[in-house]
Length: 353
Ligand code: KG4
Ligand code: ZN
Image (cartoon, rainbow, N blue to C red; front, side, top):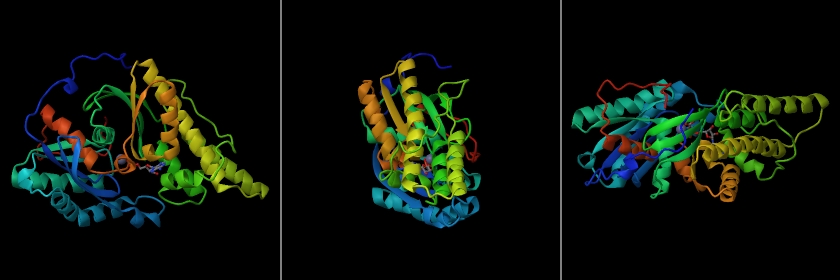
């Protein structure tokens, strides 16, 4: 279990670089081929995202093999565009940061190989970045004044983590999902009620027309750790509700199911997160990951944080879902800490934070 807020000297207190550091960042962990140039960890000079969503929609989810092939097709073009938009050449790049895990192994390998090739050809240092560290670091781009320590909820398609950000790139995980990640639950429920892929944004939109109190879905607690999450029971409850409607021959209201499900997820995320902020003695809280762009979730956190005098940070929607700028921000802090990777850097699909 984490120690209470102990603020020794951290990277955030030090004054480390006098020269501008420009990071070329590459992200290919799932279904976005992305490259960006980020200055000093906080300023986006360019941010190019080629999204494959349309390609995977007809399959109802990401097909790993298709994702890898499309990354290969697009990666060089996306990197070139990122340099062009930043109006610089590789000569002006200080380091290359690349996501090396977690994610789909074939997809990760494309970005890692591209980054290693550029580094090998030019001698520019290579820095491997953890995808979740990238999501958290999106907050540094959005809020120039934000410094650790703070508590962060990372809710994406593959992860629901409650993390204490002790310093830049230094994390302590205090809660995690026991089964489905929050985004995964959004995607599965969206599919079950016929909204299709990607589920999160579609549930977000249709919920605005629904009644969040219409159906009472369960809010699961995990006995062993009050900060852990479990969403598979909620997902089953939604499926049971749909089945029972079908068996009784009655139609259900898509918007009411979506809104009630969304409220059940958000209630749990808010309760666990803000309980952790209070218990561990912090006054700053951030959200990150694709689910962090959910409008109902943002409003709920906004309201609850205001009531509890907690400063609330949330990246813009574009920075919540997968992008390379966030990898540039996380890569900057790794770079100034002296982290360098060799040409043996490999994709690690289940990389731990
Ligand atoms: O962080 P992300 O882009 O990729 C991963 O690292 O997984 O997150 C994607 C997840 C998907 O499950 C998607 O449905 C969910 O984020 N998502 C949302 C919203 N936008 C994306 N979930 C709820 N509401 C949204 N507006
Ligand atoms: Zn992600």
